[in-house]
Image (cartoon, rainbow, N blue to C red; front, top):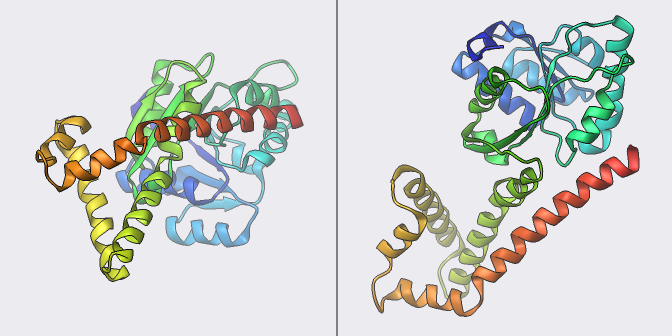
Length: 292
């Protein structure tokens, strides 16, 4: 399945929430597919209507109906319902004696390939090819960062297709070569937006405590975050070099950075990201243990 063939693929989205809608919107905006080639299964009427009205694609409440003709199936459900959905679809494929199983792209957080493969197994022992993806919430603005891991049997052409699928909402799409690295990505970019939100929150609080009106502090801090982010993306210099460039000897920035260092910022970040990675692993294991 070559990347250029995505326009001819029947795309099924199991779950019509924010992330699924972001993927569809990105594909349609880039002209990678047409509305006629997309169907979304979503149990909640509010989400169905939102998808229909904003994206103009077909919707249904039936997972089986949505997946019937799919070449690519995007699993965009909450982890706690993933097992039931996967087993329902596997049973329908068994009953219909479907010969070619779809490529499954899972953005269900924490659900391992082992679990997905087991739950999707049809009665003759076959399983679909599965790709795990970890996106992040800036995808809702077309500014996402995503990482993927390909399970057994996924071809290079299928990986290219998944990359094209993700490029509709991700500015950065990476492939990792070990599944456990998806948990590292979760701790880095999956949870990462919240780290920046927290830092800006504290910056605003500090400036407010020193007398600056909160509204002004928030406008200045958020634009500083945006501007710094653009410098990171749009220049060829490393984060370390950008930091050096803005740090004058014995100046104000140096004083602040020295305070960060003395407070153990590096170790704080190390511990925080490791905590997120460990929790991602725990959640994945718990999801499989409790339902597997």
